[in-house]
Length: 293
Image (cartoon, rainbow, N blue to C red; front, side, top):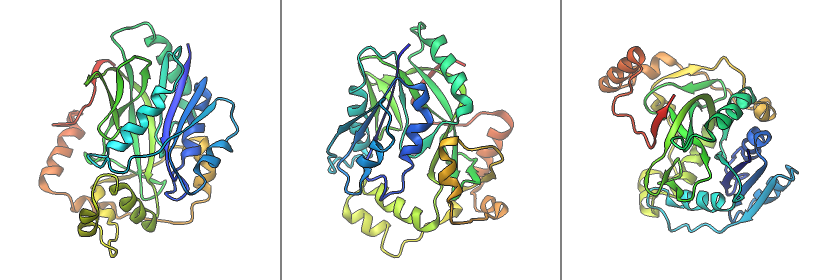
């Protein structure tokens, strides 16, 4: 069984993306790793090279910044990386630049790939998510955060990134997946206030034009943590690949969890109540078809 990892990245240093940690967190499971390195001006390519693994292959790309329809440029760059994996690979393991996998899940992930390898009804593996927010000590626990996404795909011709590359499609239909008991740790919102201000601006410029940016994110914009709805203190351990970054944390945020919940609308509180006691997330967006659990 051959496994190829793949990702895309641009200006990881400037935007404080833990891309090295993301790659290292799944590198032991991969026989090769493709990185689509965009036209950066902050030494991102050199950062990837410094990992020093013979498994890593870097392909240089140029982003089309005009593709602002729903963050389409992210999907285009993801597809470039996916297209570069070896033809004889059985699985393609996708990781984004602000995600990581805990090594405690490696044995389970490997077994799930082996078990599903010869099952044609399973085209991908669906992961659960933990979304860290504000700091490495809290995670979002509400409908504002997506619960699951595809991160392992069989190497099937016709698979392509969908919309802004949060997920994938096969010839424009939903991919058939098995839900596995492994988590992706998402660190994109684990930043100090000034870092989140920068993230919001840098992220939205790939979705909106200058007029929208000026109207909605003026120079005086300050990020508001209250839109999280509900945060829970994290009591587990982080991936080993993230430990050095977390140890170097130089900010501290202590959330008033009661105040956050009080800011929720009645509708969101009701939907959260239903999910808590039934497990049913009403009207959940699912860009996949679960065929096995």
